[in-house]
Amino acid sequence: VLVLDAPMLVARAGSVIPAQTRPRADQLGLVAYAVVARYFVGNLFLSVLHGAWVAIWGTALGVPLTPVLGVWAAITSLIPQIGGFLGFALIVAVSLTQGVGVAIIMGVAFGAYMTFDNNVLLPIFVGRAIDVSAPVTMLGAIAGFAVAGVAGSLLAIPIIGAVKAIALSLRDGTPPPAPPAPRRRGAVRRPSS
Image (cartoon, rainbow, N blue to C red; front, top):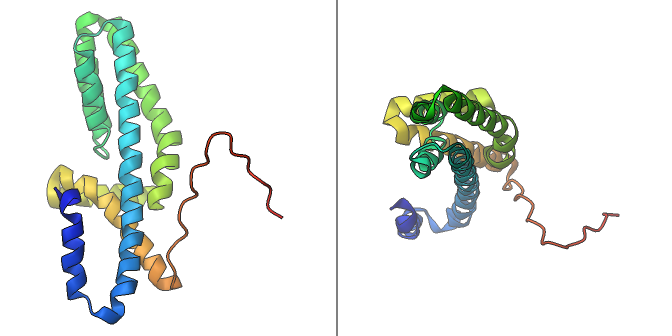
């Protein structure tokens, strides 16, 4: 709903801001928007990968309700701090219906993906978007959960990243550089002189 109402909300907020400071406010809004958008797109991409990983392993091992478990893994991977445990617990429990060996393999596959995701993919796709240290991220997620439950936990991290980007922009007087544009296939990168 917020995404659909965003243009109207921006227009209303803009009408309250004095005309002489509106260009700077627009610039800061774009800085915050860029951080939040990159964070959510990165998280959605990684959650889809996680769901596909669980679905592949579940299908290969004959685990019942594999499509549901894939969706469950994707949804719970969006929840900071506790999502991994929630996904793991249900997936291993359902895998036990096929035997202890299958449950162990599913648990190891789940843990292997989580380890790879947390140490390789997450810093690349999400860490660069918000540029906030791990302790601040954890404390922000815990504080967000304490204030507004799961929704607060989901929103706390991008808000912290956006506030940091705005503060840096105000301190430097310029917005932070935009992330590099993705290269097209077959495009040749010329060395800079």
